[in-house]
Length: 142
Image (tube, rainbow, N blue to C red; front, side):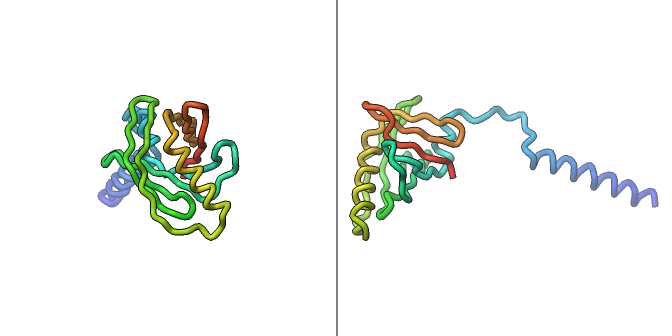
């Protein structure tokens, strides 16, 4: 009987340790802001102050590549960043025709905004891309 109680106590202690780690208890320092840029899938929230469609963006730090969807077509290309500076391109895109002319215009504007990006900033779950003339796009973490 005493052995059974020791086993229960050992199992309970083990479960408590596992739960503590699973709930996020850690002494590891927080990741730098750049980790949020590269470790997240981003969904376009607005483009130059206008509502967005289905555009997305992902950064692969292991390859130095950016990819995503322009709404109708997929794209990929290189990116370089240093501190808050960010440059994407050249970007290569598939060539499917958008079924809607407004979707085609928005996709072109989106790719131009990515090309015009010069700086980035993460605020909570929001990524803001800016160019020489100010904010070009705002994304939400997915």
